[in-house]
Length: 545
Image (tube, rainbow, N blue to C red; front, side, top):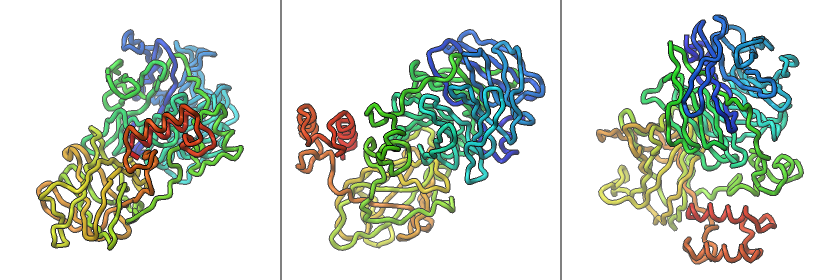
């Protein structure tokens, strides 16, 4: 029986995972491989050479889910969930094998703190036992029955990261101080960190998503690096990974392909470095140097841990563990010209792209006085990224009938967008669309950039004019309004000299004031002129605002 089959039997569409991210310079990658009554531990050099079997597991211990290695003791630790869930330990040669603890629930993943304590997910909880298996405590219980993902421990900063209810969350080692780090995912099966670069990585894997994603710790710059989303909605294959920043490497296991791959940190240069044989499948990865030592969690770069700053009064309006002063637009208050709202809870929105190459056509009326639009927003969820090209969003005038857009000429404005995997949750995504509209009726057209492979679902709105869904063959279907927003941004921070344009003159003026340390270069208004101001201005400038 495969792990995928067990997930279905347990109702865990995305809950099995392994250790998500030990990393450091090393020679070997340790790999757990599952097979009914014939599992084993294997190893391979990180360049793909010298694969070897480390030791076989007894027939009853055939479902190892995630592994960790502790160099100070020379022992491997793993969770076996073939029957009861057992925290296991052995040397890398398989000697002195022992069951440290038998724990309740269907468990997955092991991750270690500085004391050697072992953290794991069990059903909808995050739990911990001591290094010898004693002292089991429950650190977190989800508000829903759906399982949490495998936890990842950042021992340097005393944090535990895990996936829960479409988000990546973080708690202290004792279970306190809950933070929401990343929103708009489906199920974070495994997690890895690169605190020094301010980044978090995860495997998002369930019946519709199967990719390795990355974002900043403040939930910006969301991107998918490696996409295994199936062409037909089925099971995911990505099961565990290791991110090694110092080696510019990501190692990941795919249990559908029964292989382990390596890429660089940008997801490029994919190469196969290990293949399971005899019907085994990889289920967990760990470097032979053990858990990586993370840098201080100090996103605002003031030399003080962000937790300490926030405890001392630094604002954190979105409760993500990053001070607001280090974010570009924390808890942004939008100047909404149009807001249909999003009925995400019903989870049955409209369709974009494959299989019938669906398009959406949403009308809206501009009142007297006209609108100056800067951004467009939509809410929904991605089904398959594939090449990640996303959606082409275009604005057209009405054809005079009030019933259809006039698509005979070039669109008034265009932009590109992409949703996250946020089924049943509201997670608006925004893109620039700068245009001035006179009173009248207009239409937003949404199509897949490569509709034969891309598929997403804009959510339905609570209000707005009735819309059209159109197939690739040109057939129209009357549908409810789409979740849509139009935003007028008051001013443009990147127009530093206020001349109405964002260009090199703005950059030169800011750079000159910054170099002189003038108060006018305090771009984020935190009372200091430092690198944070330069970074924030550069980000606004790059985005055109």
